Length: 247
Image (cartoon, rainbow, N blue to C red):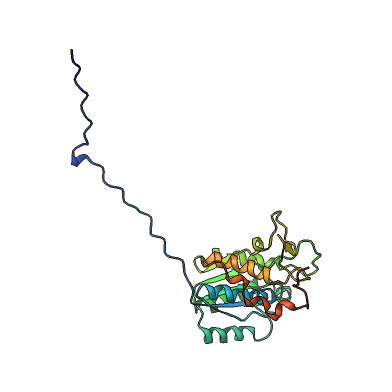
C-alpha cells in the first residue's frame, strides 16, 4: 500500500497573518558638530590649547582659547568680563572648560554653597550663548612625585555633578585615562611618551595631544595626522627651558 505524502505546510490565510513589527525607538540624532569652540581654563588648559587648535582645525572646527595661568571662576579680577567679551567677539556654539585649584581661596572664605552658586552663574552665562558645554576634570598630578598643592576635591565633586543637574547641556569628561599608564598610575612618562613638564602637572606636547585625542573622540571628531604638526614648537612647551625635551 502506498503511503500518501504528507501535506505541505501552507501559510495561514492573510486575515490570520500577524501584524508587522513597527520600530518604536526614536531615531538617534546625529552628533552635534560645533562651528566655533571657546576654551576657558587655567595653565593646564593653556598647555592644551595649541593641540586643541590643531586637532579641531583638522576636523573643520575653529577653536579660540582664553585659557591662561591663574584663571578660575573667581579670579583674577575681571575674568568674567574677559569671557563675556570673548563670547561677544567669537560667538561660540560650544564651550570647553578646564579648571584647577585657583578657586580654593574663594571656597575657604565663602563656603561650598557660594562656589556652587558661582558655577551655576557661569553656566547661565554660557548657556545663554549655547547649550553645549564640555566640562573637563581637574588634571591629575604625576603619581610618582609629591604634590603639596591643595587638591580641588570640592570643585571636582561639583563639576562631576553638572551633567545630572543639566542633562543634555553639560558633559563631564575625566581626563585621567589620557595620562594613565596600563597599571592605572599617572606618571610623567607613559609608553615612552613624555606627557608632563618637570613639575609633574603641566603638559608637554605629547600630554596635550593625548588629551586632545580624548576630547575629540568624545565629540566623534578625532582623526590621525594633526598631532605631529608645527604646534609642538609653541614656546609654552619650553617653560621651563628644556622641560619637555626628551632624554
